[in-house]
Structure formats: structure tokens, C-alpha cells
Image (cartoon, rainbow, N blue to C red; front, top):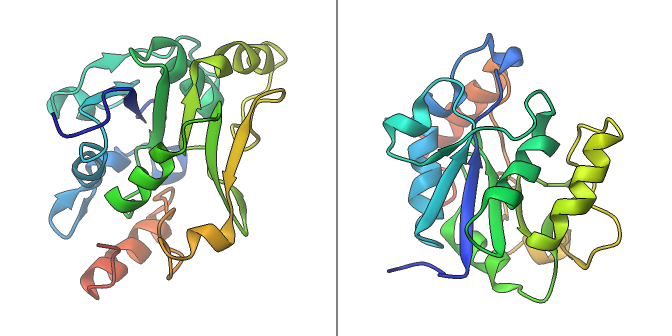
Length: 204
């Protein structure tokens, strides 16, 4: 075993990628490697317990991941986080979006190292990064309450919990070029990510 036995990782692959013509973003190659595989390579350096929430195009099953259906279909990223927390076999769950090709094992280890919190979440100058965060089991009920109120966005941590933010200053050593949280939501995003990789400037 190479990873943290007290931590699971959930990769959210439930979305239909409407801004990308309903293509499977996780299968897009960068440097000859699908985005999902790039994510798996770094996540598995942190934990051996990895599963997918949703699998809209079958990419997770093809990669050999256990697949958990969304507990509350149609509830967006917030519903995916809720499913990850409630279905995880571990008390703590690292939740990752399926379209973040430049995450690093070094940063994910740093994120997972903070244990005395219900949520450990990066915060850049643009705001929170909820799809690269660690959630404890205590998040389940507050997340459920937000979903029952009709909320769908995950960009605000659940209220009433112990939240540790990893702010811009603390992120700089791990993300000097500001690419750590790049996600591939659109064809323009994909072309930008391709240029970064082709120029040899992707985070190691």
C-alpha cells in the first residue's frame, strides 16, 4: 500500500459536458495521456482507495474504477460531492473533478496532510476550489440540507463546520504558474492545456 489508508479519493465524472459539446472531457489526451489517467496517476500517490461518482461516458469503468451512481441525479457538482462523502468507505474523502489535468501528487499530499478539519479547501484569488478538496463525513448532513434548499453550486463550503483554507500565499510554492487548478470545461480550455503541455510547462 502506497497511500493514506484513512483517506479515499472520489473522481466526479457525472457531468454531461454541455460546454464541450457533450464530449467525454476525461478521455481527452494531453501529451498522449487521457486527462483521467493523468488524474489517477497523481491521486494514487496519495491513496489506494479511489472510486468514481457517476460515469456519464464509461471512462471510469474502462479505467477499472468502482463506480457509484449519483445519489441525487441532476444536482450538479454539489450533489456529486454529497454522493462522494456519503458513499466513501473512509472518514475523509478527497474529491476531484475529472477535468483537472495539472494537479500534482505533491500538492494533494499537502492537502491530505491537514487532518483536524471537516473541510480542507484551496482558495485562490478567484475563489474556492471545491473539486479539489478534502471532505469529512460530518459534511454529509449540511450538504444534504443545501441540496434540499435547491442549491447546486459547490463553491462555498458547508456552514457550521471546521474549515481549513489553503489560501493564495500557501498555494504559491505548489502552484507558481497558476495552472494547478486549470480545468477543461470548453474547447478553448483544452487548447490552452494542450499548449501548456506541448511547451513542456505543465506542473511536474
